[in-house]
Amino acid sequence: MKKIVAIAALAAAFAAPAALADHHGKKTFADIDADANGAITLTELQALKPEVTAEKFAKYDTDASGGLTEAEMEAWKAKKAAKAAQDGAKAE
Ligand SMILES: [Ca+2]
Image 1 (tube, rainbow, N blue to C red):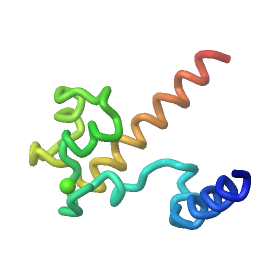
Image 2 (tube, helix red, strand yellow):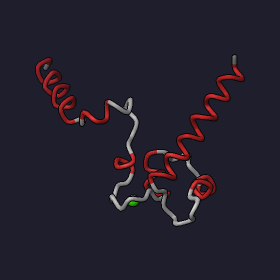
Image 3 (cartoon, rainbow, N blue to C red):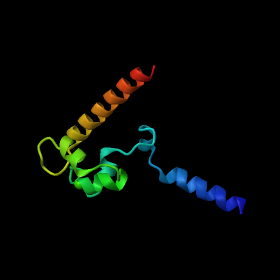
């Protein structure tokens, strides 16, 4: 039984692409873009983050294309990071 667990753990370790480790377990743009068309739709994003609303999505879909480009996703991430830093400063 122990041997099976060890093999399963080893298989899982090899199955995880090394690139993911650089993102601290976070999904990359390509991971979220399930159909790899270069834009993340609300459906694709909700598969990862079900809490994202259509309103919130639209706010960051700055060209209203119905999909978030990598640049739009980066802008979103930057805004979230800025907010987190601000919240952290308030807590101190
Ligand atoms: Ca897509």
